Image (tube, rainbow, N blue to C red):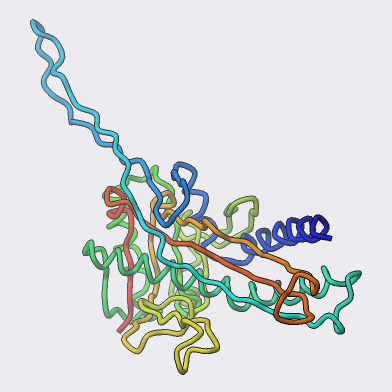
Length: 306
């Protein structure tokens, strides 16, 4: 019985992983984590490299010796989130368990996990950009002013990273509607491919830069992530902080944000294994975070509202 349960959990988790990539608007950031070193615990290490600049070549003594520095910065994972669900054994027999649990956990991930992960990542990017003075604050976009401001923000990034570094525009969907109505916008808008993990989709582009539309509820500068136990937080999930501002858009180098999910698992216990109830028990845990190394912060610019 235990072997069958483990195999079920393996198939089940593959399905959830695919759904996360297909529905999370920030899933593309996880592709940047390939160089992350993780050996357990709550810390990861990422390589940071720097070199000395050019020096004058001397025709007698030759080259001036330069220095290359490679070090691994340490970053801490802070978002350790989870939930447990119970499905009564009389309501679910073993033959249809996978279908029933798939419905429950699929809806849980679609309606709860994906929005929360997106919201955390975008608010985290906004906080890092603000700390690096890479923010245009209290801007109210209109059909008349949005193009000029968007161009200014793109230029602020491209002036640092260059034209060859792929950029992404992450935009509040309400703001994207304003962009769609801007005078002369059709000259700059097209359609292109955008790849997140193994999923490639068609997205709109602005001057060949992909635009990722995000629900406005996930585009705030601050959130409260409920702990599930404190009075008023029993339902779990997240909500915008009372001090939160809207994020209009984020212009970001595609390789700048590094999103890591180090524990994304489902545990399944049969009614015989469950010590608390005659029920199938499903545990879901996600341990994740997002960072932007200090040498890449200039590749980010955030535009926030009032």
